[in-house]
Length: 382
Ligand code: UD1
Ligand code: UDP
Image 1 (spheres, rainbow, N blue to C red):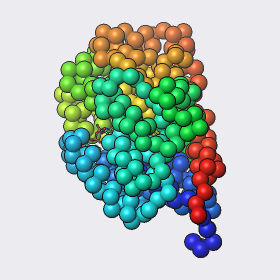
Image 2 (image 1 turned 30 degrees about the vertical axis):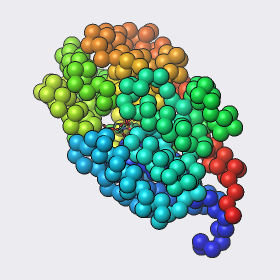
Image 3 (image 1 turned 90 degrees about the horizontal axis):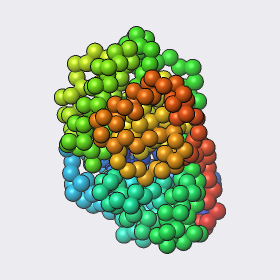
């Protein structure tokens, strides 16, 4: 079969964490489907182990190489140096035409640097997000800026992110507004879940006992320590004030998250601490929920498309579009504010309706298609 595909473009997709796997999966699947144009290599750094594996099995993707670098409690120093040194052999072995990275993680940054060292073209998916504050999100803001300075293709999800790149003098011709591939992933998964009952066997009977579900996630490094304690205190108060509401928190595996969450939130009758959910299960839970409280980047993008209000437990966000549209709201780590805003959304139907409007500022489900059209149109491989 291989012999009939002459002059294909070899795309190397590098991912390591849960969100990168979710956001690159639709692109990898589409590149596979266009195998007359593209040869696809999928490299897993496995910066996350279980959380990345869950996503790959949901999308049916098998990496061509797995660097297996995760260690419990890894530091940023360990992470970046281990990925970068591992990438040398990967570049030599696979010789890509383009290295495709997504977002703002240690994997994305080091893989883009590896692509540069190997003198390959680098494509950045989800380019141009900025807060302007190098400490928030930490270290993602700086990773994003460094990836931009390396990338040959900037695939910006929105016009705002395009403008951010223009302000930093990146050439207009290299910036393409495509939407965010997370919406491709979400719509793909929603289609498969249509009408499905609760996939969480043990949790299904629990859910039936409650009228409403509040879904929670949290993992940002800048919230570790005191901010996390303030957020968890607000969540505990909310659960105690609203015994008829189910609060479910699939807890991120980072030990800096596990410890405070279990210490403050265990043992409350209507508060359920769950392991991280597979992507299909989490999408099902988002659809079932009435309110999401989260500091996640991906959740801020997905929830508006599902008409779910999000209270964002961050002081600043690089995703201003949904805030400006009034469908998500920043509440920071202020205990009183989190309680006030959540209670208002639970008690005031008109206010709730104003935030649950079903608009999708981050895409229409066709971002992967646009990205591959641009790559196939602009690259000639001899
Ligand atoms: C990472 C990214 C962050 C992204 C987040 C998504 C960096 C520096 N951080 O943060 O940008 O928003 O992923 O979730 O790139 N762990 C497990 N099993 C797993 C995953 C994690 O046990 O499957 C534990 C390990 O102890 C690991 C720790 O979590 O050492 C931290 O993982 P790491 O990827 O370094 O940081 P995150 O906080 O997950
Ligand atoms: N997600 C998931 N299971 C969970 C929690 C989140 O599959 O238990 C998905 C969520 O739908 C989103 C992505 O993981 O697509 C967000 O990942 P995370 O919050 O870890 O990282 P961030 O987006 O903040 O970088």
